Length: 102
Image (tube, rainbow, N blue to C red; front, side):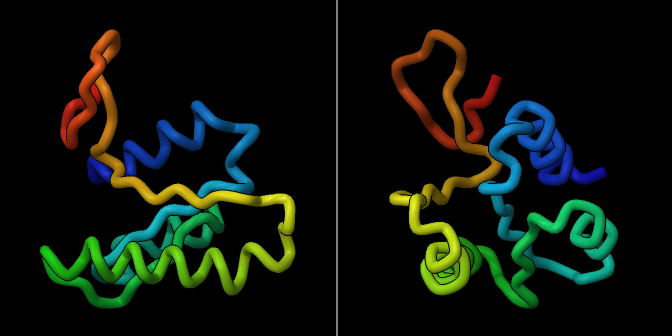
């Protein structure tokens, strides 16, 4: 499994009560994520994205989908959070940075 899928699996196992409200935005070849997409029903797949444009495209897609599709049927949701699967903080650290996950 890719490191991104491994991270998604960890999030799914660590936040079992929140998984109905957690979505992952992925891009790349469909055949690489099709099984996971069907198994978990929590992926938003973007058919095309390249390096620097990928992050911006994913952010716009996420916010648009959440606002138009998820919010109307879940009016209790007040906030959406978009982060990358490699963002985090080391234990005991006051400073957060990308790729600083322990």
